[in-house]
Image (cartoon, rainbow, N blue to C red):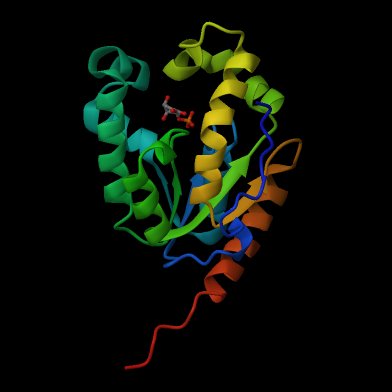
Length: 203
Ligand code: S3P
């Protein structure tokens, strides 16, 4: 099934959903969607801390991601990723970049939606492939496919697209765009999403 990034599902479209809290900005999206690059610049702009949950996993495990997949399997990695997400979700004034598979566990999505504005960074499949092909070895799930990289990416996007869609408050495309323009767009939209939050009920 071809991947179409911001296809509105039967649920509430992301742009009309309100984050329950907006202490942080959370970036979700497929490998090569630009979460780290955009996240670092956005954190700089806001003078917030940049937190990368993959990096937290690597630091805690003292092993890189391919080694973790090889020794503990994907489940071991996902358990560590869930722990990193739980920990990151307790902070504030952070831009949190997640790994591409963070949305696979509902408990992660719940924690991320509670902790801030969840922004789904999209990229056309060819763009995601171009951005990742030279370092695909660092991403075990990209080398796991028997197909060529684009076919494999399309298959994974077909499975994960609805999960990103369901998790996101906002969608921002990063294909063929200046990174500073992307950062400005997220900054503006996240501030607006925060302003739109319902006021707490009076007692
Ligand atoms: C994964 C994405 C990676 C990393 C791990 C698994 C995935 O992060 O968490 O290799 O399942 O999509 P990036 O999205 O930062 O590459």
